[in-house]
Length: 159
Image (cartoon, helix red, strand yellow):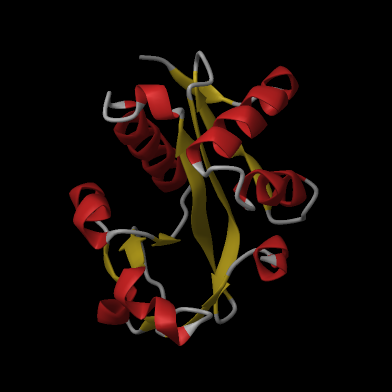
């Protein structure tokens, strides 16, 4: 399975797979908003070569310290549980670490993301934008990240 950076030709397919995976929720518009935001990092928007899956990390901060916010991640419903999501996660985490990023933060199922080295962000003293997210708010750190409140790229505030 080949994981690569998204290209302009992939944008429509990314939108389609995201809409299918999230049942036309706000995630596909969010990706479009993120692309237009200063927090967009092109090297961290990755697709499975047939665009059956997509993941993105954008610039976030713990206090004033840069970190990454991961998401959305989407896999076409007919190809879920085939390893695409895992391949995307391994690729984006490897790329983030290779870039010298200090950490990746996400909101998701701890039972799933623990396999990628994520732990509850509260273990590091990192708090979510919404306190209700705490049981699902996770971090994977590659370097020093202080305790504090995490903030996602601005487009997440529109959700």
